[in-house]
Length: 229
Ligand SMILES: [Zn+2]
Image 1 (cartoon, helix red, strand yellow):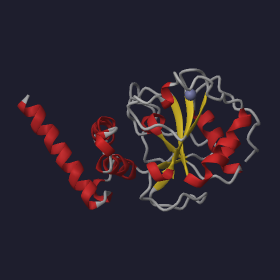
Image 2 (cartoon, helix red, strand yellow):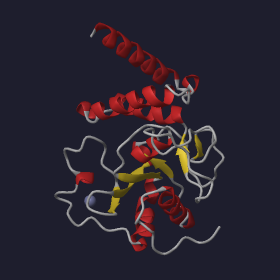
Image 3 (cartoon, rainbow, N blue to C red):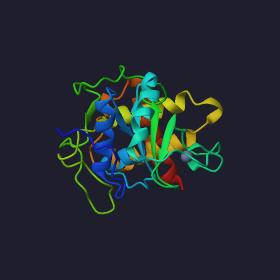
Image 4 (cartoon, rainbow, N blue to C red):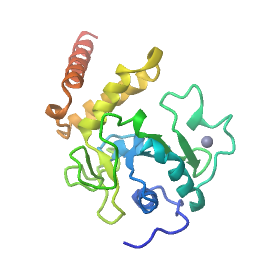
């Protein structure tokens, strides 16, 4: 594998850019897992993407930020108006972020706020909870259904399995303070139900028991609600 270029090519937001970011982090000894709306598009969820997001171990956020600084990504120069860190933002605020332009960001999230139940991330690809972005079980690109799985040509990008992703949403609701972000996580669970589970890509039996109970109740409620309305 060639060394990553010093500067990222951000002219096109695509899997090559995602792979290059993953590669830069990897070359600095930083394990990473893709997150956010771009990740959802790999699972066939039609999502508006305004950021490329990665989870890294909490202690490596400073290293990851440092590693990405010389790559041509832009520092946030308007924090008072930046939507990525706005106090009224509908979704959780990243721990660190860069800009490709004023609207599109590259963001880093701590594992302790996202996939805290999983063992500490490592650079090993051996995990039942983490799969490759080019895994053949992921859907291919379909019109109106997101990006689909990566081709096998980028630097390896790791993503959580669908049931671990769903678990994170459910657990985030369970610990939400004063209801913060609950609406966002309920929306995410709805997307997973409609598009991931709907495509047969969700291993419901793999969900932790309480999370499975919540999810099945959620589905039952939605069915009841729509039948009644
Ligand atoms: Zn910003």
